[in-house]
Image (cartoon, rainbow, N blue to C red):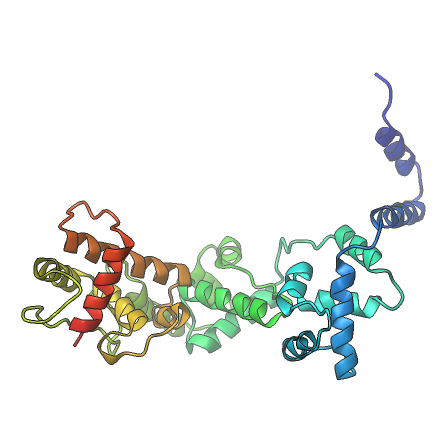
Length: 329
C-alpha cells in the first residue's frame, strides 16, 4: 500500500523545527481560508445592512439601535436585513460587529471563511476565579448560597438574557464542574468561604420550592385559586363534567394549582410568563410548561370521565380552561 498524501504531509511537518512547524501551520491555514473564500456569499447582505444602519447612526450600532433604525430604513425602501436574520447568521452580536469592522478591507466571503475556520474551543476546565464569580453572582441573586436547582435556574436565566440582548454568551459553568472538583455542592460552597450556617440556608429554601411532593411545601403567600361549586352556573362544560373537573382540581398538588392560577390569571391574578411563574419555585421554563400541560390534561381527562388520564381533544381543554376562569374565586 502506497503512502498517502496526508501521511507525507505529516512526515514533512514532523521533520521541521518548532518555529518552522508554527509557520507552516499558519500558511496552510491561510491557504485553506482563501480556498473557502469563493464567490460573494449571502453574508454580504448582512454586512451591507449593518453598514447602512451604522451610516445613519455615525457609529457601529448596538442591538437596540439596530432594532430601532432597521424598520425605518426598510419602510423607506432600503434593503436592510432584520436584526433576527443578522443575529441568527452570526450567532452573536459581537461577531456581527467584528464582520462590520473587517468589511472595509476584507470581502464578505473571506470574512465568512475566516469565521468558519476559527475554532471556538470549549472550556474544558474552568478556572477557580470563574467558578467563584459564578457562585457569588448566583448568591447575590438569591440573597443566600443557592441550592443546585436554584443555581441551574439562575445560570439558564443569565444565558437566555445574553441571547435575547445579542451579547456574547457568558462562560458559566453548570453545577457539574463544582461537584466533580469538590465532591459535593456543599463542599464547593464551603470551599468558596461560605459558613456552614450560610450554606444550610439553601436547604431551608430547597424544602419549599424543590420538594417533589410540592403540596404542603409551596411557599406561603403564593396565589392559589379556589373554585366555586358549579351548580346553577352556565358553564362551557356539562354539569357532570364540571363536577368531575372541580373535584380533580381540588385534588391537584398546590404547586400545580399555583401554576394554573398565575399562568391562566385565575381569581383576579395577573397572568405571568413561564419565567415569572418559575422564579419563586426555582423551576425551569420547561418544568413550568410541563406542570401546566399535565394539570390541564388531568382536568380534561377527569371532565371526560377517563380514568386513564389520556390527553383529550383541544376543544375539551379549551372548555376546561374557560370553566376554570368562570369558577375561580
